[in-house]
Image (tube, rainbow over all chains, first blue to last red; front, side, top):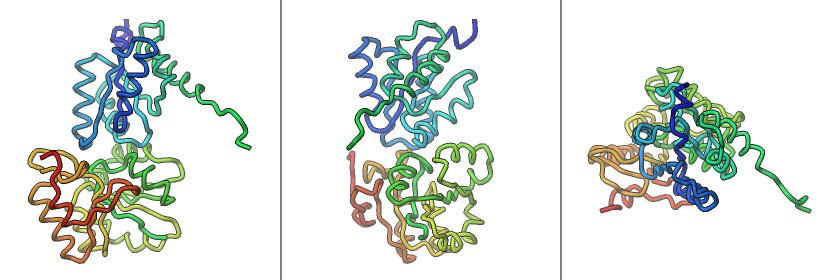
Length: 133
Length: 162
């Protein structure tokens, strides 16, 4: 069994202000599986402290997946640095609710594979209705 | 256009810089002055990956940046000058004619006192900001464009979380 397959299907969710807590509470309200996601709030932390927090949460949760909100965000930048030290882990930037729902409901055991599938699900879940005219 | 913002931010390139300031000011390049980043290709690649394709990042050490800033100020596109600490910006004030300084984010660290939600300073850093002002630069704190620019003396007198 690979290290990814043996890891818990848990992920960190990190973002600006209360973004992560809001998303995780929404996942919990819809599926009851919010406990598979660890929300990270970084208000007031410098880049080094964000990295330290992510490192500690990865270690304590056994997660190999980090979802972040914004490509250029400080959580994403810190997560890239941390994942440089964690073989087999993945970062998905640009998380949305459909993505997290897919991740927690994924039937597979491999968290990295679940994250890859969820990322694609989140990407195609954005739609625009109406012509605006 | 010119360098439209001279910002001290210990997170360097992140959401507030790229999106918060970058989009409304139509910023097309960031001048990142930081000795650690300037010495590391890996660090530079990390920051390049954080900006949209239409935005360029130029990396300099504190030593070589002053020679380039006049050229950047004459570019037709808007740019942001970014340092991760006060000392580097002070050098650019002294040696490269920076005349307005935005304190955008100096976060918690041991020995620092919280002044604003996003500004924590040691006594030495407070003195360094005063020295920047004494050298003729206008220093204000403002994390995002929609926020009020807080003048230096008000910033230093403020105490949050006390």
